[in-house]
Length: 189
Image 1 (cartoon, one colour):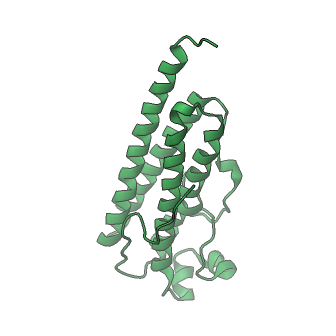
Image 2 (cartoon, rainbow, N blue to C red):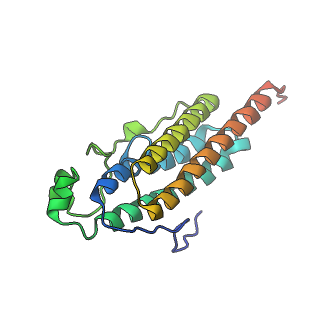
């Protein structure tokens, strides 16, 4: 189904060690509105969505895994040279004690990722509206992270991710209209 190319979807550069920024980015790694949750949500929902838009969920769900890889790379680069004292000062002491500098799926507050973050109602229109909301929440989170850093390299990558959330939201809105039109046509069996 997938062909993996060993390169990031968009370059990730980091100017300096910054565990505080890494802690914020962890929200997009293992948070409710983060990339893992989005990828799994969309790839799961495609089993109960009409064929007319199934490819959209597959494509966007796959892209979300690419975004997850970018976030992981940012977090890794921001913390790889951090001392235990820097991790503690950034509020990552619990993470450090349990995982050292390894990545782990949890949100910025340290709450582990849970499948409860994945929404699937089985109603295509309801699911697509949930997907639009998820993309808009991720867009807002990226903006807030951008607002909290002065690292131009990270900002560049975050702006790319924020813009992709906007594109995904627009595509899901288009899918809602396609399905509304499809549902309004008379079906003959």
